[in-house]
Image (cartoon, rainbow, N blue to C red):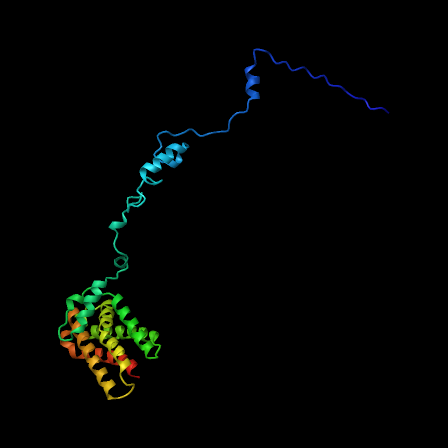
Length: 252
């Protein structure tokens, strides 16, 4: 059987001389979509005009419209007006230095300096105490921290029990006072590095520093809180036990 070929009549395409607007539009490729240019935009990088964006960033000193070397940011904040980092963390070196100097004279107590209690100074003294003990060959950082917590709670409970309803000593103030009064023990720990390991001299020096710390701590406790003046002897005995305990860490 032979294959039958079918022929299809194709009408001729006629291009008129006058031109058909529809055919002309179909023959020309259209440009892709472009967003309208914003002439009144205040943000230069949103504009599609590269020249205007470059001019705006050059004239303003930066792409965000603010000076590059200045201290201000677009949100209106100013780094020059912010507090120092130590003040934001609650660490005041000038107050720590004043409180430390007030401990150096056991015969002249300044309780007004210790009204604003803090723990930055005590933590610094604990670190020095542990460092001097480390130089003596004793790793006692954990022991020192644990004994400080127990001693502060012990003195806080004893004082408020003796003062009764008039006692207004809080634990934060008690911990701060005990920590700053550790300064004589820290000094003794540094001096003991140059003393013989055993003997009456070492024990005698320890007794002097313990009495120094006891007098300062008792005076501050009685001055900062109410109801402890009539029980000064018992409070002094509790303070004596606390600092004797820490001095034994240095002696033995």
